[in-house]
Length: 251
Image (cartoon, rainbow, N blue to C red):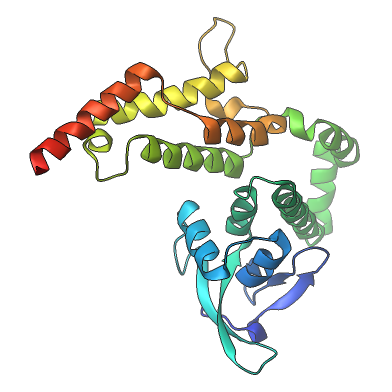
């Protein structure tokens, strides 16, 4: 992302959260405006730091710090955030408002992808329309949208959530358990397997399929399952024993 100011951004949507477009066509939001709509109770500084960290967002790639002029005439710190990252931040609120905002962002993405199609040459549009039967396909997609496997971005969100949960269950990245590749792998595998069992992700031979085959209709339930996940006793004991060895060595 380039260094951006309010003058570089143009409002393109303002139904729920203002969405802006940069001079290069990037869709972005202001962190403070997203924060206000989500109705977060903690202060903005703590919330934005925690959420960007949760999303593993990279400064200058997924967001950048900005300063805006407040009504009081003073400048205040803010953040300009890419729509993909803002969508994940909304999802992480784990409440109805977060779901509403995330769906709103998805609709905007869909709308502007369709607009891109309209800008194609008449010849190319004609080929695509004939080949894909766009009118009839769109009706089916609208009906079946949540019966298809996860979109790539949704699979990435789920994977990142599993990673964060695994780190937490292992006692942090500095612990012995996290550094033990066998234990770390066992924890991540158990989280994924619980998702697969819960949502019936099996092939015809009864073997687990990839978590990416999860249907979109279950995405929120899958995230809630990860939030509530607890290590089985045998794994918890392995983690505790491994981390205890580190404590003994330090002592």
